Image (cartoon, rainbow, N blue to C red):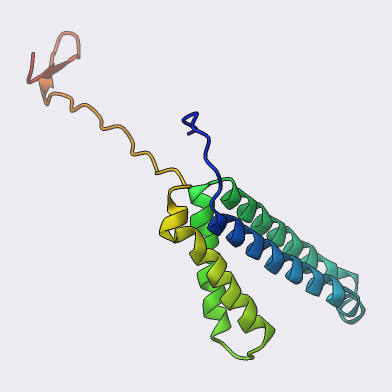
Length: 150
């Protein structure tokens, strides 16, 4: 999808990626601080959901980095993540969860501003198929279709 034209990353996209990475780093630190309490209360099997959560967090970091490289699909999915975070921010208890949800919504909104929209390449439309002539019947000797243009 590259056209050979160098393009610089807009400040809005850089700010959005930076905001996402800060939010994910805070989430990682929170999970690691809670890890000893989780293991002591749940036993060693409590590490399985923690490992799955860290893998999902790594996937989100990958998405944020892809937004920084200009991926329109990653921009869309990070926007979905931001909307889910904003909806979660509206639910009690309020505090750090609300702040994370609001900041995630801001990070999801920034790449959609007009100044950043040109950084993401437009989605290519599939080529239109050439309409085939209508089949009128089948040749009884060869089994070939008899088309309207023939």
